Image (cartoon, rainbow, N blue to C red; front, side, top):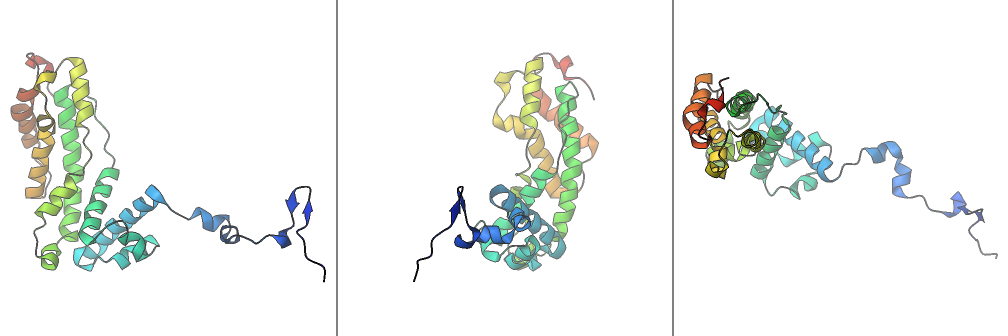
Length: 229
């Protein structure tokens, strides 16, 4: 009996002699739907946030998130050790992707106030969503939501470093007066108020934080450069 050989013509292997790979058999449309790395993680966190807002913490399950994301439970379990870690990551992701335009008013005071006003509105909307989403957290875990909220809001990306750098370049700030704690102070005070009151911060409170607490700590010895917004 004659042995069967691969047929090669001008460098092309005959289709009948080469097995078809799984990826080829799926076709380009199926392959394009594959998600890996950061793309997959973002999709999982978006699904977790949507599921959290839909069913609340007591109803949240890895299976439910997996179904919403179109994946399997082990894919989620490999990335987050438990439900709390997934919720914290989902809140941080949602906060980070809520775009805030970085203000550029020309003065340190104007920039900081504009940023705090934007964040107060955006974060207070999230606080409203979290009030429902985490309403059963204590009943389910026996723990307060305070630490969870703190960890979630602490994930909000800060634009303060850029604002501070602009002010240094304009000569408004004495760099020797800066420290990480002082730079983060106005946003830390704002976040504390949001966590405690779960409502937008009154504008006079924001102005007090900036004018009476923050600016006196950082301004160079030329207070007239602070400007007024």
